[in-house]
Image (cartoon, rainbow, N blue to C red; front, side):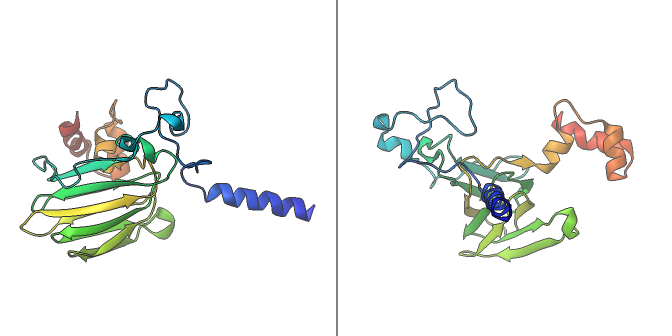
Amino acid sequence: MKLTFLILLTLAVSFCSASDPSQLQDFCVADNQSPIVVNGKVCKNPKDAMPGDFFFHGLDKPGNTKNAVGSNVTQVNVEQIPGLNTLGISAVRIDYAPWGQNPPHTHPRATEILVVLEGTLYVGFVTSNQDNNRLFAKTLYKGDVFVFPEGLIHFQLNIGDKNAVALAALSSQNPGVITIAKSVFGSNPPISADLLARAFQVDKKVIEKLQAPFN
């Protein structure tokens, strides 16, 4: 009985610690034409794999930061590189205009490690309610590295008067992103303004004003 319990416990722990599905072969290039829906992407025949399935060009090119938040994220995940399928990793380039920000957001499926290539960034993440929502924040300079744990809300702000650039790696082939302001105030259909007014403990008109730019 004890042995059975230990085996079940070990299996449970191994499943809980798993991230993206692990490959059981050298690679599993995503078949983006397949109509089959699985957790991840269907593999195409490995004999049909080509070097281009593992390649992305253009991460050296700056993104367009002329937008409301003053930043641009160039994604390099399984959608851009089919060969990332099942490998549990992806990357992004983030460009920031002076005082531009990558607003508070979360990656539901990935831890992120970020390195500053140019500029000065103020970055941070907030822990869960269980940990009293503590803010871990730091000013980063060229060459500095910072880690954002999986699922936690985090942000970056360019606090310099010049453009900034960062590269980040994420522990998922498709980490996903949930931008807090857009999700809460720009959902489709909108969340009830009465509900949000009570949740944020502000007047309903404040909520309607916050929802307006997203709807």
